[in-house]
Image 1 (cartoon, rainbow, N blue to C red):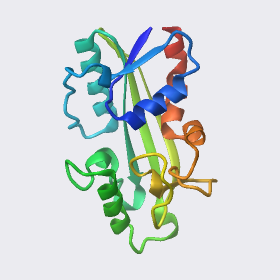
Image 2: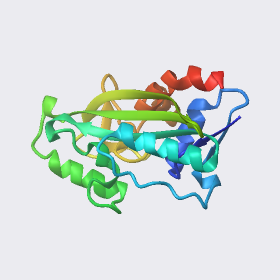
Image 3: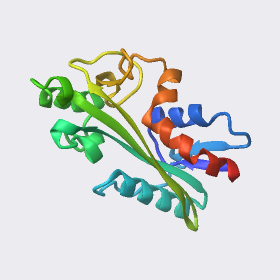
Image 4: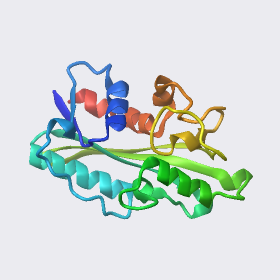
Length: 196
């Protein structure tokens, strides 16, 4: 059965494929396979609403089962920033490097518990008739004082999960995929996916 990952982000698509590779008869495609599809803008105030809009829209237009997520990094001492605007923290067309640079600047002088942060991932599964299931996964850690590692994407070079001595960008991809916020959310939606 085909399930479309509602994303053109090659890193995110690869993570989903890695995490879901063991499900038999699941054909994972993505929006890269539908170049004419125009995704709705992500303008909501929450990750949940952004993911829901993406899932419903793609499922209805493509007439397929769709898996859509929205993820963000939340730093408690910054009032939850970058949060829902993680991808465009330093501007609408910001690069990952620019977003990380802004975050490091905002974290200047902050120590100990003030460096606590968490990644959150909200996933919605939909078909053309509407939403089937939605879940959330969280991964807690700290913001490092400098970038470390070359793997991953987004804020991974700055995020170190509790009980680990490496950032997400220093970990092997297979290790990150076992402990990430996305994996925690996917684990909750797995039974529904398998039942399809």
